[in-house]
Amino acid sequence: MHHTSLIATIVAGLGLAFVFGALANRLKLPVLVGYLLAGVMVGPFTPGYVADQELAPQLAEIGVILLMFGVGLHFSLKDLMAVRKIAIPGAVVQITAATLMGLGLALALGWTVGAGIVFGLALSVASTVVLLRALQERRLVETGRGKIAVGWLIVEDLAMVLALVLLPALSGMLGGEAAAPGPGGVAGAFAITIGKVVAFVAFMLIVGRRVIPWILHRIAHTGSRELFRLGVLAIALGVAFGSAALFGVSFALGAFFAGMIMAESELSQQAANETLPLRDAFAVLFFVSIGMLFDPMVLLREPLAVLATVAIIVVGKSIAALIIVLAFRRPMSTALTISASLAQIGEFSFILAGLGVSLKLLPEAGRDLVLAGAILSILVNPLLFVILDRVLPRMMADEREAAGEPPLIAAAQPHALLVGYGRVGKRVAEGLKGRTPLVVIEDDPERAAELRAAGYETVNGNAVLPEVLLKAGLDKATHLFVAVPSPFEAARIIEQARAANPKAEIIARAYTDADVELLKSMGATHALVGEDEIAKGMLARAPKKKLAAAAGGH
Image (cartoon, one colour):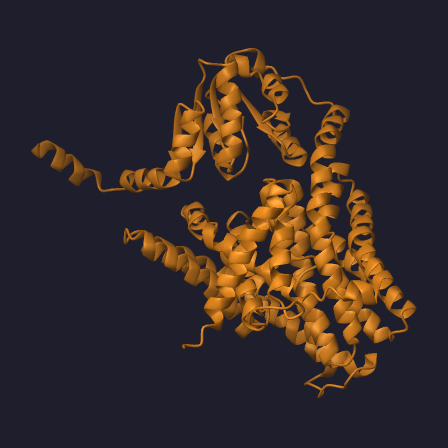
């Protein structure tokens, strides 16, 4: 029989994840619980089949790459720079606070200072996959809150890359095995790492910004959807691997920059759609691989230590992040969203713990606590967001009331109504400005404030709620433009809008033919697919003289 560990790992991982995920959904639990339990079932600490312990983490890393690439497709360098003033100091202070809390617990357990520093660092960095899935499920990635969280995550990523480079150089000083001194010692290692990161960013901005969009457009013009999908995946994975191999940065950071550069192309939305199924599948394998690492017996061996570890991750880090965000005079709704996003740990934590054990800095019991803390915090994190989903609407309404929203003049007369001010909504608003009275509905308070400052009459709230549509003057709207990216959310908005205003013309964005059918069945007058509009744009740039000559021939 052929050696089939790769196939067996994928089949067992996805098969059991589906079974336990469906069971968790039936019990009204987050599906992540099912995925993690599937990993425990195929891990080495439970009887029966044991999946390949080396392949599973590599498959999970592909999920991280594709997820960060997808986030980059909805991000821009301008977005990243806009949040730097809070993301950089916020992440640094939060990492410091979590490391000190971890150090305190380590000293209480009788470990060395070096072990405590590694342990604390491992507890300080959030999981990319968990954070982004939570934000994407709530359509928060493109909001002000989401951008701060992603920027914060990028800073954490860079800090951990630096820690992984410096730990071997500092190991002897911290009580572990002394590594062979490199050129320049610790200062040299630090300078080399910073230099590589700067070189990578410069390379992507100078070379990548020209080459990646050019390749994408050349592939698109072949007319082959299969080649386009393959090209997008090759760029995402190739840049991620190349950035790690040549510049020493993480796979996730390389993939993020690849997506951010590709976002400047008009084909970026199609690229996001083509990679979505693979992103979801490999993200599931990420959670399965985490479950495989978990030894349930640690809960019986060290119950108090596990409880303290989880408390640092879920409570300590959250409070630190909350205080930091509020110190920057951001709304409580933003502070709570950031706090909940960071209240878990993941992939970098395992890498740091593994390095600490190999350098004899961290005892194996420390690695077990990190794994237990990761599993339990990932289980708790969706529950935190469930609580937030119930609390935030009222809180954000109070914040809007306290801010004193200006009266809407356009809502009292025939006007156009736009829902969502993301990449598509922004273009629609700019095209309508000056042509007709316009009211914009935007659920992110910071973006809503920016809209008002730019001169747009804006209602801050979720258009799924009937009272928000009513406040925006739906009954007087002649046109409703639904520019939210989720087709299911758009369908709910359209259904309510059509019932309240049967005469309005409703135009919505869609990604697939199935989306078009769904939105039209709910009452949309038109549902536009990105591929169709790209094709029209290409034809608009076709040589008009030849087309005219051809038309004259008929």
